[in-house]
Length: 262
Image (cartoon, rainbow, N blue to C red):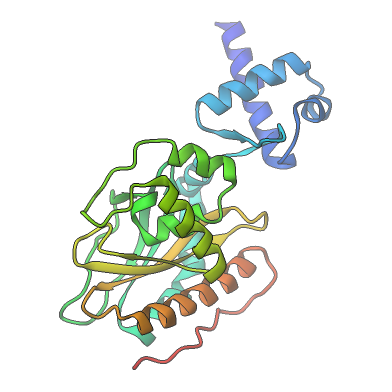
């Protein structure tokens, strides 16, 4: 039992060191923590198998999104909610549509915060236990577009479940969409997660560029015209760009959303 405990402590030490020095190679990491390279390699592979670390094509190691999710449960989620709330309130005030804050959880996203539209016909969700596959949601696609190629490859190699007849389950089509999202700065879906709901979303990123959350505007499809898709998408993209800068400590004020409702 003592030996097993020692192995666990070494593995945790490796994980913590990766969090400080990421992305980092095995040899460099072994020097940083003064541990045999073979031991470090075993710990890294264990953490990768458990979903805590990811390895790039160049052999460098970084924390996985699972770490962000666990961190959120210990307090980051509250921080993200506090950070995002002013922008979400402003988006709802201007658009009068439902505004949602989502966080990644493996190959799914989980709802952290929801501000409902005041309109009689609206998209309604309640926070707590609601998860959606990344590939089927605007928020999930926005985060996928900001992930590394290794992470995207791993996620798209899994079976992609269809939630509605419009859910995109073809990896090649999804890759084309991710390219478009990177170019536009926002994602959009039309009846992909729910039959009569569309959404636009953009990802909030940490200082390293890793997506930690996404803000989405969700509304009934009969209101989501092409014009509104572009205007709302641009508004959300501008809002999360300011939030990402604020998260990195580069700005202090509430983000501005430069649109007006029709």
